[in-house]
Amino acid sequence: MSRARDMRSLRRSQQFGKFRVMQLNLVPLVDTFVSIVFFTLTTTTVGELAPVVPGVTLPETTVGTPALSQLTLGVGATVTLANHPVMATLDAAAEPSDDPRMPLKIPTLYRAMKHMADSLRKANGSDDEGGVKISLAIQGDKTMRYDLLSRFMQTARMAGFRKLSLQVQRVGSGP
Amino acid sequence: MASSYFHRTRLRRVQRGAGMRGNEGGHLNLVPLVDILTSIVFFSLLTYTGTALAALTSFDLVLPPVVVTSPEEVKQIKSEKDVLNLLLAVRVTNDHLEIEHSAEGGFHTRIDSLNTASLDSLQALMTELRARYPQNRDVTVIPSDEVAYDDIVRVLERLKMARFSAIALGTKARATKVTTP
Image (tube, rainbow over the protein chains, first blue to last red):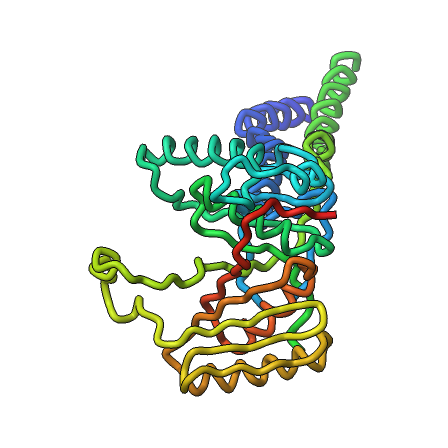
């Protein structure tokens, strides 16, 4: 009698064993979602911020419009265009213009900027010599003199960059 | 007795298995998470270029105004808004500021030094000019060659605070190469 009850109990447990819930391991899925959320937040927050060109100490201000990432001319010890070094700043300051009508022009920088402007025009599908629609941001060291800054600005305008902006570091609120 | 013992043993084994399954659920595998975090740290270090991200702000510059004389250039003016009715300029040197405009027979004033007090005076005067000529939002800043970029930005900051939105940086006419120490 006891044996029959034991056998029934065994069969019942085996039958219920057929209806066990299958295990579904959700841990890798959750990990993947964690990665996606991390990179999404990183790229949306950091991707549009303008990075400071290495080696440049920017002036500080309390006003101005928020700066977004754009084509940048950095002027520290080295002149960089879109993070690519073009020439040393001292060489840029000492280089004479090759155009008597444009005494502020820096020929080496002009060639790099013209190449960049032509690439942008080609990418936008406009082959004319009109101005580039993209704004050029200048990040200059705060100790730079204006005569050098004016040379960079004129060279940029000659290369086709009509829209210029000065990117500086924002601190606190206005006085 | 022997078969009864066998079946009891079998039954206990089945029950033990079911009991063990019943105790599942508190197990969380953190190894893949650690793997992914390790990957993130690795690629973050690999792609780090040393560029610092900071809260930057920008001063958008406009081209300085030009005097139009030829009839062809006059025809290109699309609307009256393109014509400035006030030429306003701020000259910046290392020891003083000069403000000039073309209205009322010409205006010229000088503010000595380039410190916080003189910049406050500049801001007050420019705010007054902005209120007196509300249609004019253009100003041309003409720094001397020796003025530091930091000082120029301080002047631009005060002009922005005086609500001048179209700021141009001008430079004096030159015929020779500029030398910079």
